Length: 417
Image 1 (cartoon, rainbow, N blue to C red):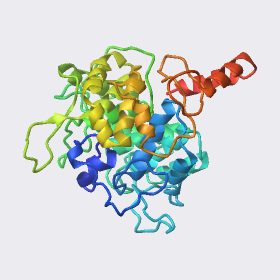
Image 2: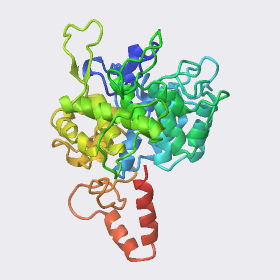
Image 3: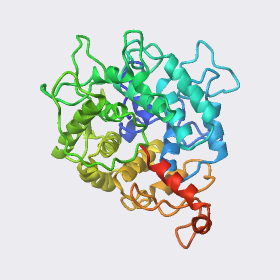
Image 4: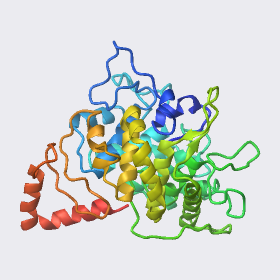
């Protein structure tokens, strides 16, 4: 989720996904005279990540039962082109998108996921999904922009968007019978080889596959047909790498989880290579990619293998999240939720409050922090942590009456992957 290594996006990768890069290379803040759009989360220049950080914030808020404001939702939908596509950011939405508009599959896919999860503007989400289907590559996958070569990260996040809108991804075939899953599987490194189980971002010039940890975390979710806010799997499995050429998408996903678990067994965090030209050539901790790996492990049934990494994030990543803004904070919330940690007390930080403060005041919140297996609180208005919120009182009344069936059905819906 945190790195899209296409040549066109390399210069803006850290900004675009707001996670993998150190704060030193984050997006520059707007000049004092610049005014950010009303409804937008964050205070940094949104040119490369406006839609991304807004959508990621919604996904993290949703799993913590925070309802974003109408103003924030309207801003996101206002970024959409008539075709259904999104760009990274449109400064002037009064001008219609045209042939010069750079459409972005990643921004479109995460916006679709966000709208589906918050259960608002579903028609706009479906419109985005239709556009994504229309720009599928012949190999079954997607590139960062329409027509660019398929990559693991873009294909994975598009799969998540289509799956959440109800599209049977495995049946989305091209003329030669390729599917999104076969596109991802073509980037998997065989278990018999070095770095077996890992995924490449894209093939090299000679078709070689080089392990990419970020692409691996993304591909695990993609091959399971899950979105970014996938939560956790109730199944607990021992990671293993299955050999063979005729593997199912699930088996290939498990191979990726094996590689992630094996890598994190050596140390509880992932690293990123130094940026070109950096004075310090020492690899640095990659907080965002570590959080993504945690989510991928939990979603694939290896939550126990992610616990050490979550503990490390609690001790080391909260400062990074505060400086990194809404996208970074959202990633920690997703990692906390997937492993049962309390996002409202994560390393001594209330991540939910921190995220909420980066945008318009939410329409509603819920207390206390929900967990994958714990009780599901009712929605209420934003208040401090003391006492019973109005939402809890209403929830108690509903539970005592005919509304209990509705609450239980919502609980099952929120627990589904």
